[in-house]
Image (spheres, rainbow, N blue to C red):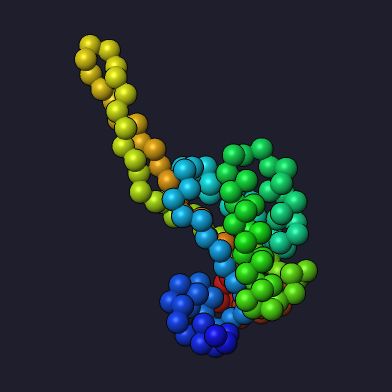
Length: 143
């Protein structure tokens, strides 16, 4: 399947990238709260991929390991499916959506119970060449 055929068939790619070159990767149903994952994702948004990988490798947050794996996957997707050079890629879109919440109960005093919410996240990262991101910002379309 050629690149143009794949672009026509993937609605997810169309919403994230449109016609611009780039690739994305996502991890769904990750057992970390979206608020904690967003702290890590906000650090890498807009960075070059090699800087982002170095930052995530030494970040103390628990979510950094998962975000690191998603970023590596996005870079590999850009290299293999799109044929892009990995040295000039930038994290253009980084988002964390809330997944389903598992509800659990914890016993408390006097026969009562309180609910514990075990939240999940959907992490999505998009990498694009630096010149595409710069021209999108220049034209006011954001990145």
